[in-house]
Amino acid sequence: MTTHVALLRGINVGTAKRVAMPALRELATRLGYADVATHINSGNLLLTTDEDAVTLRRRLEQGIEQDFGLHADVVVRTTAELAAALAACPFPEEDPSRVAIAFLAGPAPADLAERLAAVAAEDEPVVVDGLDVHVHYGHGQADSRLALAFAGKLGVPATVRNLRTVTKLVGLARG
Image (cartoon, rainbow, N blue to C red; front, side, top):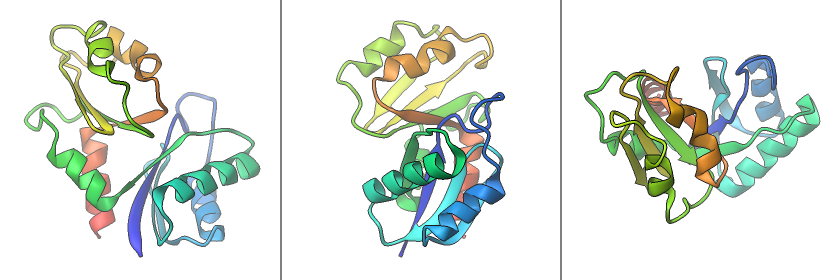
């Protein structure tokens, strides 16, 4: 059995796509997953399974649609993959609330770094690393043009977590 972290996109952000974490845990348990847990209220689901990431993603997305009547993209990483993304972060000394990792559901378009750089401010370096995109929002995300345009530039389903959340998820997944 492998521990996976399923990251749900856009859950409980604003008033749309509301999903209670106890209900999400119940869904995952009913689908047959073990060691089910959630972290904070934004769709971070930890579980163990022998299923591959593609099957896990598909089953969770279908279950969410059936149980909650909404679509949420799900991005799945093993504990090792999540830890590798954290270790590869090129901004480890920066304020973890201003550093984010976008976890892509599929391969990044070849020109993704250029697309993001075109809207990024000087203090917003972006590093595309395989299925992960690391961003340092130098002055925070609230007034960032990059943060506003980010999802539209990716060209692939993705979800973003700040460094503090990714660090906590790796710790929880490792037990």
